Image (cartoon, rainbow, N blue to C red; front, side, top):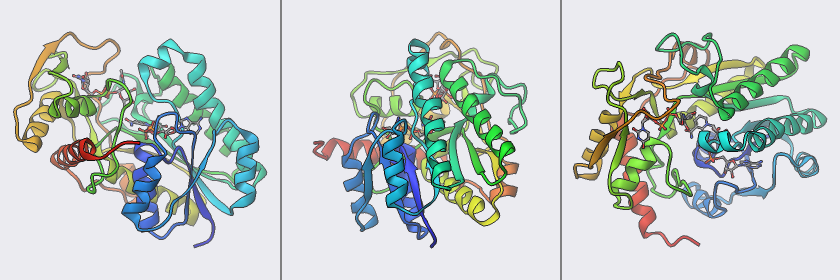
Length: 339
Ligand code: NAD
Ligand code: UD1
């Protein structure tokens, strides 16, 4: 296959699963990561799963010189750009840091790609760009109006990519708006590994299941949803990883960019998640209803037609698969010695 694929932020949760999908499809892949939110040991685990050595370069996407060296040493056909900070709460406390890392990192990376004449990039965007959407399931044409610095950094990144593609049609961008990634690889060797108390539902539920946290706090039971709790479109991280493979293949074969939602099109409530996880771990998980979380949206759900028609993407895995693989990952983790 002509040219390697660079995964910026490839040691993280979604990047590590995408690494495996790309290697399985025959791509030669390089991980570039500063490990601000991941651990170098992930590369050993990826080598164990894939049965082949992993090429990983430690570095920051805001470091032009490091990127120039990388592009000089490797023939890189395309980049998948995962490297970003993703905590909404931290972004409110440190908007400048989020702009520097998320927007500054993208601009520095694009400039290095331009110098190296590498013009294909898949970008990790988020459903958060829709703010409180007028329509659910939400189509890609919905207005972008994020409500916090993290979400706004994603909108700004999308705008930079659009402006660049307009200025020079030689660029091809795959903008992927993920809904709620969940689950883990079936090996139990890689998964989501938050460093602090998790903000997101699925990793929080996992911590309760494993006994590290006493009970789940359900933020709001008075939403206009079937059971009153928040509804989200949870997508298995392995389905999401395959979405990146299809996006890359489309960019490389057509030279045309795309902006697509990656979700299942099916909404699941907080109570649905608790019930599915309880079934996966074989115990009824304790929960308590609390006030709504400020800034929360009642329902997020993807319109999925475009991902299907443009990329041929459809999800294969269920909420039960997400919970079972997550449970396997957290129980395996408990037995693995972390360096
Ligand atoms: P993650 O934190 O697990 O992975 C991000 C990786 O990027 C980490 O390994 C981190 O060390 C690295 N990184 C961050 N800043 C860097 C920098 N300046 N230079 C080099 N490496 C850097 O997060 P994830 O869940 O895998 O998310 C990947 C991408 O998807 C992010 O852009 C995130 O905003 C986006 N996204 C995630 C979700 C989600 O729920 N996980 C939802 C929508 C969008
Ligand atoms: C959050 C972020 C969003 C980001 C996404 C994926 C906020 C306001 N939004 O979205 O920008 O793109 O994560 O990283 O932080 N819930 C509980 N108890 C918990 C945690 C969550 O009841 O302990 C509920 C929430 O109210 C929501 C659902 O579970 O209804 C999912 O929450 P979460 O996993 O945080 O994802 P999002 O709210 O979709």
